[in-house]
Amino acid sequence: MTIDEILFETEEKMQKTEDHVLHEFSTVRTGKASPSLIENVMVEAYGSNMRLKELATITTPEARMLIVQPFDQSTIKAIEKGIQAAGLGLNPSAQGRFLRIILPELSTERRQEFVKLCKRMSEDGRIATRNERRHAIELLKKTKGTAGVSEDAIEDAEKQVQKLTDGFISKIDVHLAQKEQEIMKV
Image 1 (spheres, rainbow, N blue to C red):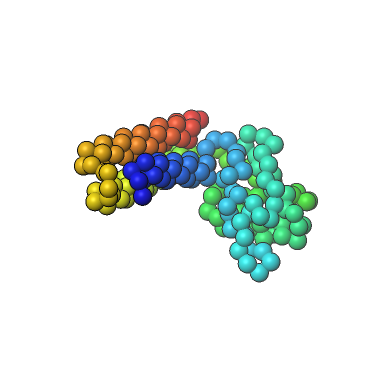
Image 2 (image 1 turned 120 degrees about the vertical axis):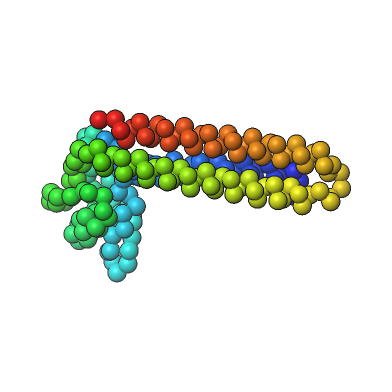
């Protein structure tokens, strides 16, 4: 593997880590409703556990309301149980062919819990980014013996990997600060 391939692959993996952190942040509740809050809730239907997004359409008609419309009406009770069991503090109410979920106002303690959760998610992202850096540096050291690769080239590549790492970690920190602001906004 060449130095350029290692750098490209490392940047790609770090980008995926950042995207994953952003996706994780989208599952954390803020003051407004979002389908991503409940789309991954596991529901026991058809003899197995399935994600809610596989069983129903989720929409947000208002800022603090979610509507869940099952594809199959026989799963409405199972969906209701799954949402209640998910520990999100949501209480769906059946309204004929769909479920209506009104998001209650968040208390200060609950907001602080969500901020802690986001900090944990961002720390996991930073750890994953650092692991990619370590892996890239190991690969660069293995290229030392190959033809045409000087120690200076490897050293420069290691500096580039460090720059990438610093850049992605700062991006994750910026995303965390934005999410924190969003959560604490009343």
